[in-house]
Length: 78
Image (cartoon, rainbow, N blue to C red; front, side, top):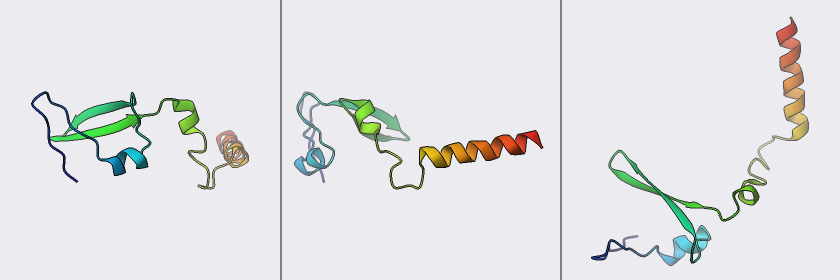
């Protein structure tokens, strides 16, 4: 996908990308220059809500994390 930069430095985010990333009017974007490329990331309106379920489906549960920490403590004692 390509867009054009206007004389005022503005460009349009293609609608497909806006829909996929839920970018709506007044959404915030973070811009970063990396090795000659521009990286643009949407900033969620509610970062806490956006992070809920981030690890879901990856085999990580509160119980598994507590069990792992308990194994680490046992190893530290020996």
